[in-house]
Image 1 (cartoon, rainbow, N blue to C red):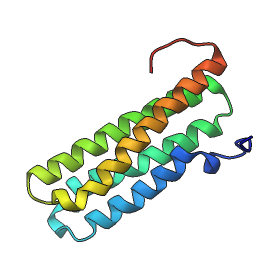
Image 2 (image 1 turned 180 degrees about the horizontal axis):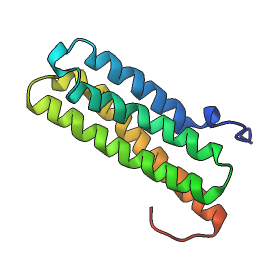
Image 3 (image 1 turned 60 degrees about the vertical axis):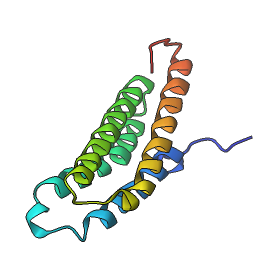
Length: 129
């Protein structure tokens, strides 16, 4: 039997979100200074928002707010993916460098959907994921 979740740090989605945040910082640190306040800032902000929202929701210590914050993390994940796609299309980042990030984004997306379903089951809430 798996150990009970004692902290947001025990959540696999939070752990992967942290990994993704570090990866996005690494991907963007070589970009030009002129992009530092543009797409680089947007990529970093969206990446950091994923684990931060999971942590904040867990910290509310109530199921419904936690679900809402995990949904916000889902939105940030899609926003991040969009920023990376734009960076790729305008030639700031190359698809080879982004392949790993896209794979982690897909994995976290699945984890967040599963977490929301699990929380909603505990609430007895059949709302869609």
